[in-house]
Image (cartoon, rainbow, N blue to C red):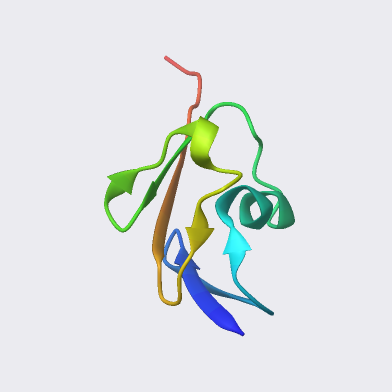
Length: 67
């Protein structure tokens, strides 16, 4: 079991998990977001293979419209 913090909320997963799978599991949209892990931006093309480690700090920023 590993625990990662996503937007300052702890989430537990039964085993190591790829960033893309974690985002999908938590219902984040695939488009319109940017993701940083431990203060480093992770390119969208790497989400499928980027494996989250125990206690990783993940920040998901979602684009919004407004004026």
